[in-house]
Length: 85
Image (tube, rainbow, N blue to C red; front, side):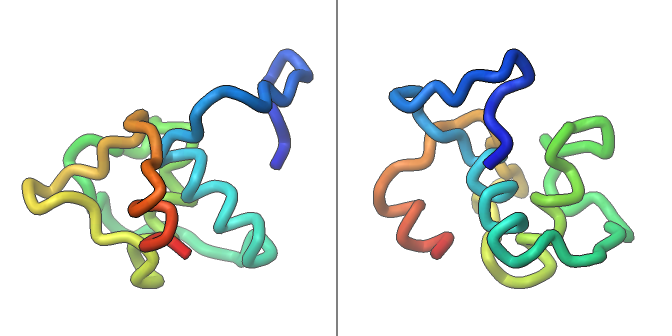
């Protein structure tokens, strides 16, 4: 993890789905990856975790929601965390 831009870690702040994708991408060693298309309707290339989310989708780590969204700022519940892992 890199923490927040202000230098804090915020240990009791819930983890959002976009941050979970970033954690897993970094855990994998931040592999070289260039997204080729936008997978989720609510995660466009301007999203700060776009590459990490697209990497997670390309590697079968996440499939998003049935409506084609990823819901990047939704907190990760325990069941979703288990599915990501």
